[in-house]
Length: 453
Image (cartoon, rainbow, N blue to C red; front, top):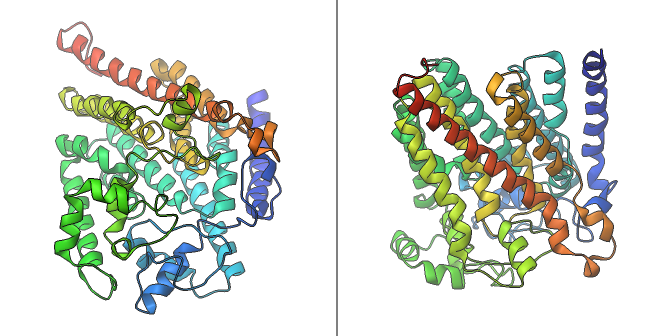
């Protein structure tokens, strides 16, 4: 049978693609996406630099003036301070070439962990093979390995949150599922905090409230230590000034945006609080760079009008309201399954509402694509699952950049962005529809027309 043949073939294809991923920093497939000259590991070097800076009593956010590790092109570190303390030491004491190779292996291993988590829940041998293939496949994954960004940790975190909630919907009191959810939330919060907008729903649900409170407490404690302990925040500006900055978002947007500052890190930006202040600094900043794939960049370029930043926050507002409505679903298992869809919906708002979205960040679609594979044999979800899978495959395929490779000045940015933005918007609509279906089913059950699931 074709399915059996594909199930046997996919592991070999997956292995070949993993080899391509590892070799991608050498520039094998650079024609598929934009990359500045000499830009190998641009997003990675700031990680060991941050830790080495800290060892010498400097700010871990002083990427450009501190330890000269790797390069020549390096981007500014913006992750959580704790990530530098926990992860960076494992890579900071090797030569740059060895360090980056180890980081690349770690990134691939983390993606394979994501695939394995879903493969354990896949309904068939072919589905298991597909999970292991799609966890690493795609041009965004190529961009990720070339840049060396820490985004793979977020992909793993999002997978743990989704699968943890999904497993809880099958067995609400399972401790393993609760630990998986907690691990995913904490991993995201201590790297890239994409789960922040998921916390209100998780706090409202009785099944997830306790574990969410524990995670928040741990996060607040770790964050407070990173900001308040002088040896961990050696160029801190003091608690009083930090509070004043959080209360003055206009000042933050004007004076603490790394792009507006022409990549100059000011004294206030060397405080560890910049990890959170940067979310404010870039909240309404537009940048029409060829590698920016946000909804705002797509629409603004297409129309020639810079719409108010508030317009692009509408998908987030809708997703938040829908996620909060999950608490009204009576059946506990159905409520947790709806929460799983709500988490995926909220994860997509990053691409639609945040203005600075890079191509490698679309690897965050992987956990959603794999969830669709797991749900392919689940009756009413089958058509939705196939639609999600189709959208995910489009995102994984090359954008239209290759038509303009070598001629970026002639590139049609709207066309290039369309193969990322439009499939993600379609995914957003599919997730929204799934939530609506859960609400409608709950209404029908309440009226006694259907038995509870």
